[in-house]
Length: 468
Image 1: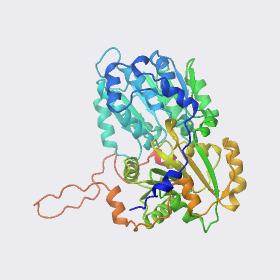
Image 2: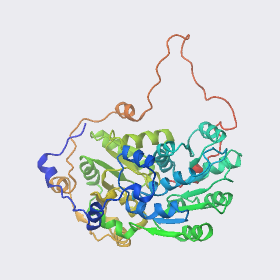
Image 3: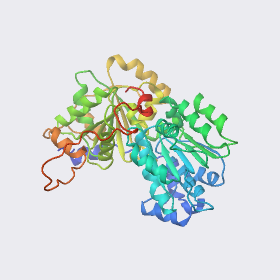
Image 4: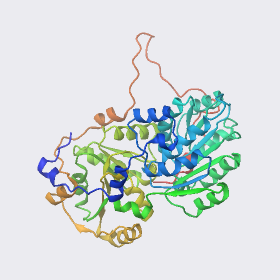
């Protein structure tokens, strides 16, 4: 559907050399077995193409296996999921193999998308050790979550609001938790989940092992460390200021009239691209305009049904959608590899959001490009944000054409428009096979009126989420 850039244009796209730190890391390959990971998990990781641990995994896994409380600092994409996931699976697999009716480990994540990704990573590892994992998140059906907790499950991966809902119903008992993990603790603070987090931690035995991972340590996160972690060992990699040096940053000065054409050519390129905009309406409009010029783009924001959000993200991860247009709240915690370009069509709120957006690319030492469009009225604001983020770049005028192609590898779109029917065919759930016979079509009208159903149910995760 998209016109591809010529080989000549593609050849001119500059390639940023890998940093010296990354080169040194590649020369000195460690193995998970050297960190104390059992062979059954090493084989499972190898089957998934994972053979060498990232720096944060090398630093934290031995201490976590020793039972220490761990405070890990690292950006999204630095490998934190396995850094806490492997020790968690191994620690709860020690000793008696019988399964309690109550969970042995709880992993808290700030968003449904991140919780889903953590669940998908840990499930095969837990199964290899004969253990079970359940995903507990808002915006999803209660039934499978309740059934899993009733049967008995070893690890609960949860968003804070839904877990508290289940605790208040008496379905989630945390009195036997031995390991508790807080992933992206700073984002939970940003999203207003700290009261729920402390409520959950107060229900967990104080002698449980606490593993807290965060990109930054603001006041609320630091308070959690002081209140709940016991003599923690701290490991930090990929600090927020240092991470900006692992990618290329460009600021493009555009006018409001030029902006749509510059966006379209910038994203009409090989590889995955994430476009950040300010509001839900902006995301829908931008994705629709891009599809109108033949670019397969999908919108991701908090106003979409959870099922559609999951399918859009899955299509982007699988390469069926090449461009993802997202708001900041919806994109928090999204972990997608091989995103080679981040385009900030609208400025971020502050330096922290700039770093969060930029962190979607240049992951694990790969190349990445961050482009920010700057309208005349936004120049002073972007200067302050980039200065605070540690980015040394100034806006330069650029228009559609050869100069933009040299920077991004993108060409002016010339493909046919992608219809809504074609787009829905990619992101809609597969239709169940039609039954033969039966005397006509049945219409499902919403099911029963059990206590977990009904339109008036209060979903804490949805209620707490800020508007985007």
